[in-house]
Image 1 (cartoon, one colour):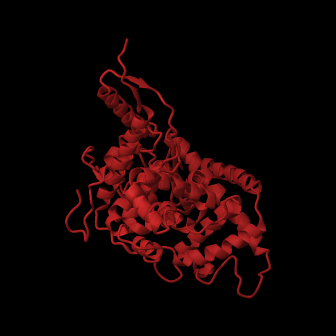
Image 2 (cartoon, rainbow, N blue to C red):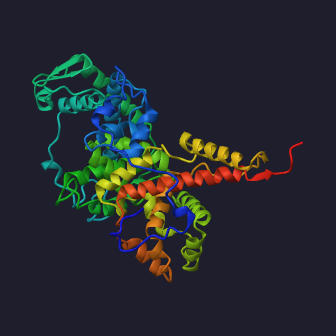
Image 3 (cartoon, helix red, strand yellow):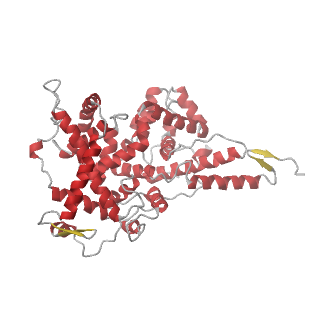
Amino acid sequence: MMEDRRPYEVDYSDPWLDQSEHNIVREKPLNRENFNKLFDADGRLVDEQSFREAVFKGGVSPDVRPDAWKFLFGLYPFSSTASEREILALEYHCRYQALKSRWKSVLAKIKPADENENLLHPSYLPDPSKQRGSSLLEDVLLVLKRAVRFGFEETEDTDDDKVEDDFVVIDKITVSGDEKLSEEVKQQKQFTDIQAQVYAGRQPYEMSVIRTAIKVIDKDVPRTDRDHKYFIGDENPNLGVLRDILITFATFHPDVGYAQGMNDVLSRFLVVLDSEVEAYWCFVKFMDDVYSDFIESGMLRKLTLLQDLLRQLDRRLYNHLEECCVSDLLFAHRWLMLSFKREFPFDDALLVFEVISSNYMEFHSVLAERERDMERARDFERAEGGKIRMTEVRTVSDLSFDLFIALAFLIEIRPILLHCQDTADVFQTVNGVFLTSPLDDILCRAENVFLMYCRRTALEEYQLIDCSPIS
C-alpha cells in the first residue's frame, strides 16, 4: 500500500489495482562482489539469466554500472573472454574513429549555405584548438584497459593511478608508460586501423541526410541535460562529444537518421560510460532494438498496445479518457520513447532505463510463462474434474515492461485523471503531476500488473470448461 504523505489516495476498489496477491519486494543493487561472481576464470559472464534478473530486481550500483552496461547493451557478448574483449575494444575504437573522420572530411569540403552555417564547429562548442587531444599511447592503453578490467576481483593494494603511470599489464602484453607502444600492440593497432578504414569506406551515406540531421542536432544538443554536472557550463566539451556521436550515427544509419529524443537517450550512455567510443556503440546496439520507437508507425503501435492493456485492465479509466478525447494516450509518447527519463530524477531514471533494458520480464519470458502455467494449474483445480478445452486466444508477444510501468504511472495519477474534464486537463495533469510514491513502489506495482496480466491471459486460454459428467 502507498504511504499517507501523497496529496491524494489511490482507490483500490478496482481489482487490477490490488497488489496483495504478489508480495513483491525490490532487492539491493548489483554490487561489485556479486557482479564478479558471474564470471569464470577466462572472463566470460557465464550466468546471463542471473545477471538480467539481478538488474531487473535491484538495478546496478553506480560503481558497477559502467561495466555492467557493456554487457547489458550488447557492447560485449556474454560469452566473450577478457582476451576477446581486448580485440573487440580495439576494433570498436578504430571503427568509430574511421567513421567520424569520414564525415568530418566530407563536411570540410562542403561550402556553407550561408555565413551563419558552420557544420563542423557550431558556436556553442569550445574552440577545437583549445581542446586537449590524447596521444596514440593514451588511446590504445585506455581502450585495452577498459576492456579487461571488469569481472575480476580488485586486491587491496591495487592502485589504478600507479598502474597507469608505471606499467599497464594487458593479457601478457606489458607496455611502459614512458616508452612507445610495444611492436606487437603497435602492429595490431595498424592492422585494425586498415580494417576500420575499409569498413568506414564501405558505409553508404547521403549528404542531404547529414545536413538535415545536423540542423536538428544543433538545436537539441545545447539543451541536453544542461543541469547535469557532465554537461553543465558554457562551451562544455562533452557537448561536442554528444554532437559527434549523433552525427556519426545519423550519417551511417540513413534509414533511421536522427530524431528528436535520441540526444536524451545517448546522454545517459555518455554519463555512465564516460567514453565516446563505448557510448557510440552501446547507443547503436540499443537503437537496433528500439529504433521503431522513433518512427511514427512504431510508436503508434506501442501506444495501441498500451490502449489495449488499459481497456482490458481498467475500463472505467479508459472510458473516462475516451470522454476527454485522449484515449489514444498520446500523452504517454514521451514516457515510452525516453524510458521515463523526464518523469524521474536523473539517477532514478538510469535505474528505470536498466530495469527496462534487462529484458527479464517480457511477455514471452520464462518468468511470464511460469506465471501463466501456475494460473492454468489453479484453474484446472477449480474446475473440479471438468474437462478443460483448449481455445486459441490471441496473445501479444511484444508487450514490453515499459508498457506496464506506464500502467503503474496511470495508477499513480488515476484519482486526478478521473477528475479531469477535457483534453487540456489531462495533459496538464500528466505534465505537471508530482509523483510522491518512491520509485521502488512504482516498479513493484508495474511488476504486479504484469503478473496479473499473465494470469488473466492464462485464464482466457483455458476459459472453456465442459462441466458435463465424464463418462
